Image (cartoon, rainbow, N blue to C red; front, side, top):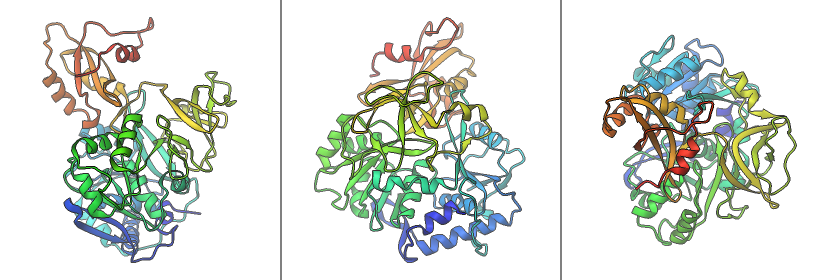
Length: 502
């Protein structure tokens, strides 16, 4: 029996007075300090308060909260109560929220009074700022004991049908994250991990909170302006020993920040995931800071599972090797053959289905779940090869899913939104390289008869339907779109035939 919240808060047996979470403002001023004891007490209170709402075990709790410490309190409190939190980005529009509420069957929506709510909450109860405050004042109660395979949380990722796809994780997923401690972080109780993301990003929930707490370390989360030049000062003033961000932020820090080997002396190394790390960026960071930068490869269905780290030397162009205890393989194109290919051959990258960090299933999508497995292997959707020393060499996605600064985005979802504009007759969306290692979501638009090319109007339309990170950053107006004889879009042809964006 286990509970993910209990595991994260107690696995390392931390001193109750030790700092678990520091919320930092500009200049690394501490706005909030949460000790392990205070954090545990608060999460137990929230769990008890939610249990008083007469919610069925496993009921989904949609989180519509901005960048504040309320997010982890409600997330872990819901898990402690035996419920299933559904973390969501604060950038989502009401229309996007409607989809998640309907698909998840959320019983409750926790909101802060500022973040956009669904226009149609359905049968879900809305609990706002006053109710959140009351949850934190409830008398604490023990967490639910749950089976390893009991649902813990539900995250949504881009689905190739154009509708977000729910990924259901088990209580055991906290234990399944343990290989990252050695395989990527090199983390211990004396570390201070600064994560560049917001609380409501699943990258932050896992890498920035779950893992530091499970190892008795201190999590640092910044709440302030996001200008790239502030990060060197923040790293230095906070005494961060580890820093986690996406490659695009490292690139911006190098471009706009004051970075040299004497800066932020406490930092041992940087951590990066969410996008492929370009070899040139890796070399530039290491040269400018005289510190290592360790990459990881992961996805919503398992978090990271391949990485470099203090025990796995980096090889530019490779994200590293399978983390200790994980089993990966390369499978061939034959959908019936689950036999791993020899070293050096390129095929589909798979993770063994026995990995405790692997998802339970796709939410209410049994066909998609079945299609994701071949024998003992979960198919990640990535093409890759594994060399004789176990290093993975990434070969791109087998589908058209795009990567927008660490967020996975399905082109179909963007296309569906743009097709509701009267001036758009047809559209295809893909990512186009703007610079080495930098790609931008680009819409190729066929205009309706009599319509005029108006990028501003299309951008405003996209803003009303899509979160900021899903919106095209460039528009190109074309006469035709490449399609197969059966009518399927050939997005790769658009990508390969497009000139780099200026």
